[in-house]
Length: 81
Image 1: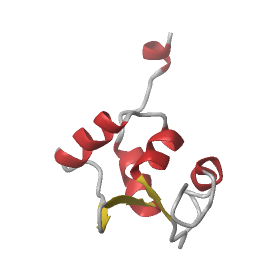
Image 2 (image 1 turned 90 degrees about the vertical axis):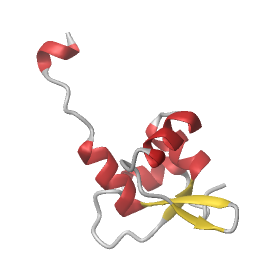
Image 3 (image 1 turned 180 degrees about the vertical axis):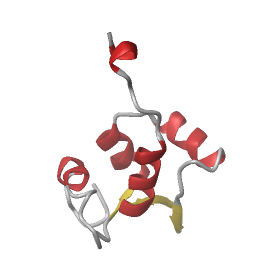
């Protein structure tokens, strides 16, 4: 369950809203963006995804998720075909 009991789908829908202060635990973040935990930890280790720790829980803020998503390469029409 996410930190503020917001389903991952709703959280992703609100990523573009300024001042959105929610954070997801790593499992819910992975579910929301469609990546696995291993890939998420690789992104954190490489410095491309910022994470926060609250005890043993790893949290991803909306701002960190937005920055990570915006830094991903864009898919061109040629590459998508």
